[in-house]
Image 1 (cartoon, rainbow, N blue to C red):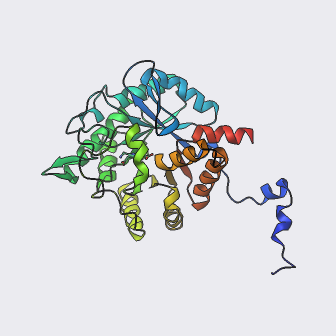
Image 2: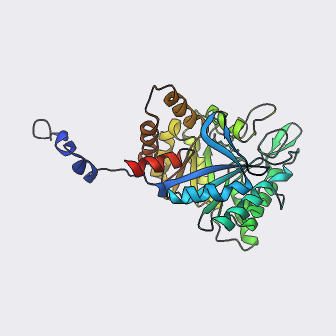
Image 3: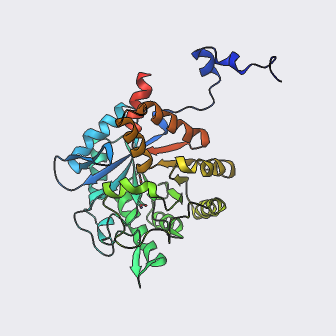
Length: 325
Ligand code: PBG
């Protein structure tokens, strides 16, 4: 079919026709909202490089969760800033650790909220790396047990889902085995399966105070140049028992999301990360773009690429935008 018989504009004539043939949809159902939790009381402090995103003390979480649920956002992922950091990240699995208390608070104040936890050590180690250090190396195998222990402590506190983001080899299998041994076989694992060593995490490292104190994360996170390797990483995590596969970051890696969508039948999540959020906010603040529209279009592009789920700091803004459109 060619012009003039075929005229694509026929079906763009009005909004009814456009919505009739719309291929991709975005709703608050698809969104996960990240929450940063810090020590103290009655604290809601804005993160400098992430306008509109806050660190909350535990007692403030109930209010925030209620606001999310009112907007139709029923899933959050938690990141914690512990009171103290040490070389082995003890705060990550402490019984009364910041995340463990946050989970209990949320389950108490907003029982309907789906509480997901980020499982990693970088916010809890004084060196800021995602694993234990042995002989100046980020040691893979000794880290696995600590991660599994951390995931278990989250679930014991009431977490509904765990999301390992450390990128150690074999961690999904270790976490699955530990949860199953403790009768938590119904808790899903959303694996950060394909996580790149990305400069787009900059603002997050300020937000969660987890920048590595030496070196970088290139020895465990993926090389941004690699695409075939994403398939191998995802395959490993599927075989180890992951329930949801995540790609991170999202926008600079839409090709990877699309590829995983084609190759795997598990649900795919994409993390629209801090730098991706901050760039849109900054340009909008300058009046150079319409922030809400660009944000919505960006989230839509992530869905169009094939993501079922999007983790984004703009979840609340996007939900409001969708309500008012
Ligand atoms: C922890 C973790 C990071 C992010 C999510 N979990 C930081 C990192 O790996 O350096 C980044 C999220 C973002 O930038 O929004 N490992």
